[in-house]
Each structure stands twice: as structure tokens, then as C-alpha cells.
Amino acid sequence: MGPSEDVLTSIEICAGAGGQAIGLHEAGFKHLALVEIDPHAAETLQNNIDNLNDWSWERKYCDVISGDVNNFSPIPPDGGCESDLRKAQEYTGKPLSRGDLDLLAGGVPCPPFSHAGKQLGKDDERDLFPRILELAEALHPKAVMIENVRGIKDAKFEDYRTYIEARLASGWATHPVTGVREYFPGLEYTVCQWEVLEASDFGVPQLRPRAILVAIRNDVMEGIEFVWPTAKGSPKSAFKALEESMNRRYAPYLKMGGDVARLAEERLGQWKEKAQAAESRKDFGVAPTLVGGSKKHGGADLGPSRAKAAWALLGVSGVGVANSHEESVRKKSQDRDLFRETGPMLTVEQAAIIQGFPSDWKFSGGKTAQYRQVGNAFPPPVAAAVGKSIAKVLHAARERDRHNRVVEARLPGQAAPTLADSTNDLKGASA
Image (cartoon, rainbow, N blue to C red; front, side):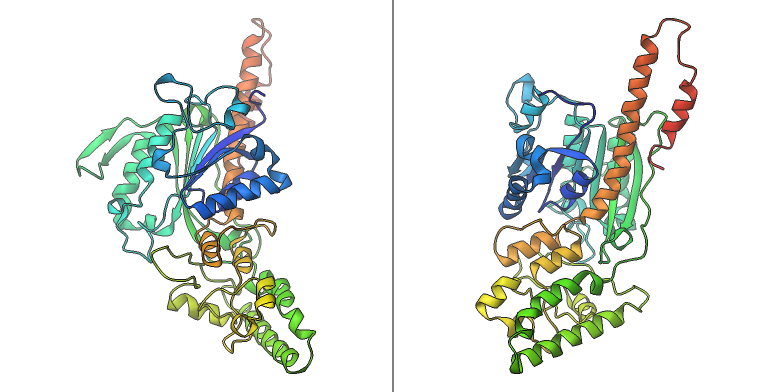
């Protein structure tokens, strides 16, 4: 099979459990590769691709690469035939070449810039901005999308942001390693700035601001405008998001009768009262930011003291993560999971609801590993919104180039009179 002009291809690094991949998939992108170092998250990606009907294209053509992105080689070195893209070549019909890819995306690790961390930025060993810039240079995709925490927009990281933009678009910047101010020729991209998008503006029942950088190749942007997505409707409350799953979790105990049923009814009623009351607050009862944590720390919980206090206002105990609904029934762990005076703990499945994952997306590994995958994810609806804005530009560029080829093929004097009108239409591609 050869490449189709109707297909938008993507490669995503630091893919995690698939939050960004799901969103870009919804936006119309087909993944040639998903690269993730955590083995549990890589297994999550592979299992869902293998089992979900909507991912049949990726099942055939996408390489899920479990390993360090620093060792990822998407293009054969020195003109050879071998690269890390094996299945993808069944679609492309040849090794990937520079300029072939439509989108390079990555939610590079956020701890270097997170307000919850030490904010070491470029001095943090987990900073993978240099790597995504190397890949952008090697692949020269039509668009680049980089996602991170809001903290990267802080004033202390202004020089680093300027350096990243200069590497992509050209300009003067201070080199983060040498400290010397120099001119960078750039990679021929138009940088569409850093935009902070709030997840709750896109139907995610969580306050989760994310900083996103979009850069589009100059030849693609010619005559076309990129427009950032805007908020869609009123925020969705944690109560509305979780009500169905909470009812399902308490249902087996409500059917038992006696003291167990009375306690279940009382605890479910307490949760509903608090969660519904929160809807009248100025934040509409939206959940606080989920915190995934790291392997260096202990078991999973819903974040630091401030986050736990915010969850308490929603009737949820943030001291840990509950067993799944089925496990709780089997292990009879309802006293721990559901019947605390401080409220029920969330299951991994409920955390995924709060993060905006589709209900059929399943997570691999133990409970703590699963929760960390969810808590560290990029909310799929936000990725979808940005992805659709990028896709509109790429589709408009293809239509423009197709039109220009037709015009160039005409004999002198036969050029279509509607060329100017068509060009004007393309400028608002993302409106």
C-alpha cells in the first residue's frame, strides 16, 4: 500500500498511556509510531491498538516502541534501509524520508517545569525538549506539537522558550548549555506561540491547564492561518462525570439489605450531596488537577494536601486509589474503598473519566502503575481540539497544492478564474 493524500500521518514521542494519541486519532491523524519508555504504558498502547475496532489502521501500520526516545531512529542512518519503523513501512512502501511526516507530537516530561517540582528546567535530566528538536530537524514534519505544564510559561523559563522558538523558526537566543547569545538559522517553521489551554474548557471535568506549542512548516503555512481552538460550552462537573460510575459501585451493597445497605445508602447520599453542592461554586464543581506522581515515591494518591482538600469538597477521599469495582466486590474491600466517613476513593477507571479518556480504553499493569498512567496523561479532548486545528491547516495546504498543480497543468490562457477566491478560502482554514 502506498501513502494516500487523504491520510495525515503522525509520530508521537513520550506517548504515555495514549491521552494525546487518542485525541490526535480523533482529529484524524494516523499514527506511524508511538514511543514510550514506561513498559506498562507501552503495553497499554499496544493492547488497545490490538483490541479496539477504531484502531485497525494502527494495528496494521503503527509501531509501538517501548524504549528510550533518545535511542529512537525513525529514519535510516546514512541512507540505509533499517530504522525503528518496521510496520510503518508497509504503509509508506519505503523507509521514511525527511519531509514525509505530517505531524511530530510529544508530551515531553513535565517535572523540569512543574510548579510541584524543583523547576530545574534545562538542568533536569528529564528535559527532552532537545530530543524533540533533534527529531524535528531529522524528520522535518509539516507540523510540530509540543505539550507541557503551564509552568514552562513562567518568566524564569523565558530564555529557554525563546531558544526553542529560535531553533524552530530562526532568531537570536541564549544557548541553554553555553550561555552564549547567538543566532539560530531555524528549521523553516512558523511558530504559532505557546498557548495555555484549560482542560475544563473542552469538556474535561478537571482543572488542568496545559501549555502547548504548535509550529508549522513555512511552505505549508503559505496563505493559510492557524487558529487555536476555543472553549466549548460550560464546564462539566465532577458530579455529572462520576454519578453513573458511583451508582454502579454502590449498587451491589444497596442490594444486600440490612446494615450494609443502610451504610451504602448513607455514604452514597453523602457523596452526592457534597458533589452536587460543589456545582454552585464559581468553578462549577470541576475536579482539581490529577497528579500522577513518579516511581521514586510510594503508592498512588490524588496529590498533595491542597489537592486532597479540594477533593474532600467534592466528597472524595484523596488518600489513595480504590480497587476496581469488580476487585472491590471480590476482595470485600468496600470499607476501604467506599465506606470511609471522608468519602469514597476513586478507582483508576473513575480517574480516567476525570482525565477525559474514553470508557473502552484499558490500562495495563498494577493499580498504582495504571493510576500513574492516567494521572500523567494529556487529556484526550484537549489533544483532539488542537489536533483538529492543525489538521485543518494541513488539509487546506494539500487542497491549495492540488489546485496549484491543476492550474500549472493548464495551457496558457486557460487558468481558472476562481484562483483568487480559492486562495482566500484557504486563509481561514482553521476558523
